[in-house]
Length: 333
Image 1 (tube, rainbow, N blue to C red):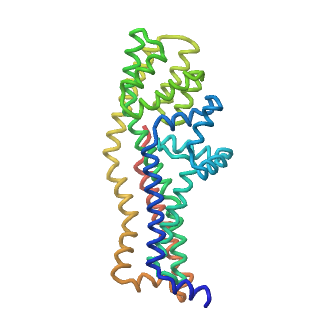
Image 2 (tube, one colour; image 1 turned 90 degrees about the horizontal axis):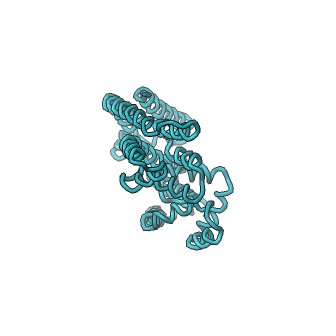
């Protein structure tokens, strides 16, 4: 019995059920562990390089050996640092090693799903499985980007209230650090969480300028950059910080108002781009359910390589159209 006959003799439903069940169990366990983990533990780990070695060691002992080994390998590379920055910007309490494992699980799940849809054992099914694995590779990154975008928008909307609270605190006689502590206590997340980290870093001995730079690294906002620049300039040359921040607050409020109006006007373009990008996939799925033989024509041996070229060209045109529509609706203020 050769390899192809052995593959065809295995029940594909059993393979899909076992693989999908394992992936689902691992995903649920990861989500439960991440949600149940203490938020202070994640903050402690991000500040671990500024804390004593014995405290860091006791924190590491709580990790699983495999995850700890993978995190240690990633921590020594630029890839792990980039992943950590992206997860921090999305405020996801996931370690780089866990994120890599999640990508692998999603790739296996999507590959198995596309392999089952593509014919289970035929030549075309393996090509479709590879396409599914590629899609699975990008899905976690798309989710992280979406979380970053939503968090950045929410942070920008809270920034004027933060500036007003800081201005009132400075006028009442607070120092800059005391005003930041008031922000971390009074305002809702995510701005309170970020300024709580700033205060913690400063309490650990980090200069204010460096702590604010770290904040800007986690929240890449143009309005926040303007605010931090004003604070740093005032610390160097002096001046009335309350008046400066009051003027910046008015400017930021006007920018937010204009951005909101532009977002309303460009929403139709954005959703049209998303709908037109998903529509071909939806039509292909309906045709696959109604007339499978017709859709599998792309993967027949006599259609090689024209079928694969047609699908690849269609994918390129769909992606290009999606980015073109987004570019039309992306208006800078």
